[in-house]
Image (cartoon, rainbow over all chains, first blue to last red; front, top):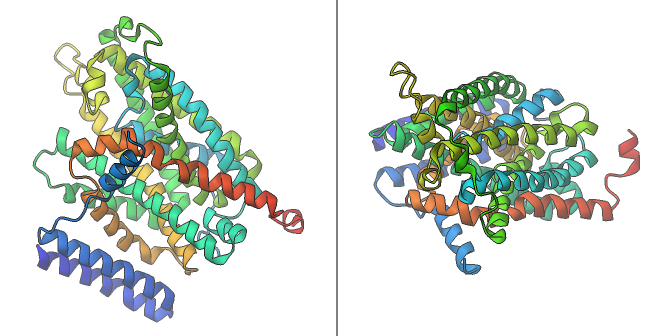
Length: 69
Length: 366
């Protein structure tokens, strides 16, 4: 599973990064790399069975708890 | 910098908004918590939704060729403007992930019992990414076809269910405490009508800014009428069962049985959900990538489509611990969570722009 993920992410980077470098779009490259890294790290964590915190449930509990609903 | 070269007409905007609003009620039926008084909640919710629309269309009319990200920078200055824009982009991203969560749960529970959610989400995300990559014009043209299909399916389902309807299931009227009715109607106003605020990322690419409110209002009223038909139909067919079901439309259409020839028609609801969620997620996705691109002054939003799409899928998979938490958020937390984004940001921005005399008169004249 992790190998598949790595292949997918490498293909994505190999497809986008040369295009951005050729165009000299450095800012796009930085934003793309940041988002790509976040996506890669979180995907690997998920595929390793690490449970990520359910953000919306946390938001819901905070709102309902704060207002005593 | 102009990131979008395409332009759409007011009619295309109208259809796009109709498709966007239908994206919600093709899956769930907002207002169902009010039981057989759901139709009253829808009417009240629609009226509140129109008030919300008045606020953000007024803001957009003041700055006709600017998205909310550009408006924020202009009104609040570079740093505060960007901070507020980040909040707005987060909202679009978050709502998109929530819609995908609900959609994948629906398909997982009702049809694809053994298919991993990740597969369903990735398939949907790839189609949406492809649509967004082609720009707003293609999205608008696509929505026209899909909305026509969706309306046809809704009319067909309703016609085939006529024999199962019992008018008594709508009685007694106003049998619900007023505070509960107001809560449910506010919930309808925030989801789906208030969510049209995402079009603050699209209005800049629409012709004839003066007709903006009338277009949005017409789209909301038309979509609201279809929602009203679906809610009344579900209540008449299912009675009290409509209250306990998570996906009442799916359950109601399951009742269709035309002389043992036409059965299991509920799959039509699934088709309707898939095509309308495609429109809704694509609009939210477009708003998110366009927002991020404008936030960082990029040349194009296209390189961001796939990485943001992947993050959306991850969020959609981990948004909720289980289905009960999902419905708890939709019925409780979201009703208040949405207010700062749907009413707060546009209203405060509109007031600050008025106070600061923005946009300058020479710019308006030009």
